[in-house]
Image (cartoon, rainbow, N blue to C red):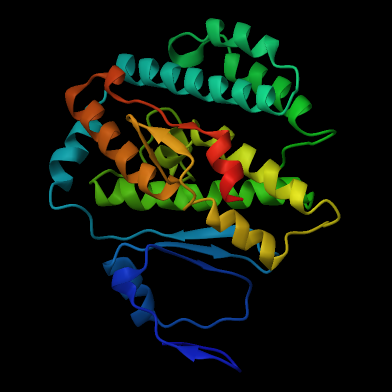
Amino acid sequence: MVEDDELRFKLSLEDTDSIVFEGDRFMISAKVLSALSHYKIATLFCDEYYLPSAILHPYHQSSLATKTLKAQLAVTPSYADKLWQRIIIAKIGQQREVLEILGKEAEKLKLYITQVREADKYGAEAKSAKYYWNRLFDQLVREPDSFDIRNQALNYAYALVRSLLTRDLSAAGFLPALGIWHDNKYNAFNLSDDLIEPFRPILDIGVYRILEFHPDEEVLTPQMKKELINLLDIVYIEYEKGSSSLRNVSRLYVQFFKRSVEQGDAELLSFPVFDIKKLDECL
């Protein structure tokens, strides 16, 4: 049961895929939290500034969790280095696509793609990130706690997909804290942060378009957050010879990652790309 001063309605958890709790003006019982976990609902909590602050991570995982976890623990350095190389190449390729679609100079990203080696030992990702952000937005400094509306929108969109990936990884039997590349002992979602990288430019173009519709806003409005959440369900992603939404691609992507890990072959993981025409038709 969901209710406020003016409205009361029932929500079917069986038919719910994700929920975002915003601000500090809501109350939720332990029973409801347990139910959200039971139904493996991707649940994101935002703080008093409406910035993402926590994810509900279900304890119950796949019935094949032991098999998958053993494969995850057995990942070799050579596999991890190769997979990270492929992830970064995919990410930079999509960054280039974003800049070219927006009519911005992107030539140097072609060079950075050729410089990506296993484990990205020459730092091509960092070079491309600096180049990319300096051209995507004027005078934007990427900071987690920035009140710049562009940063707020980007971080909000990233957090939504991060929560989906975390849910799908847990359901597939993975331990999200154990990353392939990210290795922060204070981060419970290192693996999610590994796998989200190719999705970032896909979200960037969606955020860019939404910001174009709201040129005078200085902070994220409820309407803008609704539009960002809707990015999860717009069918503008091409993956494995089909078109789908971010929500559905997240599940499929994790399944291909699972196969890749269990077979120890980094080449088995393919990466999503976006279709700008389909995105623009739906926004």
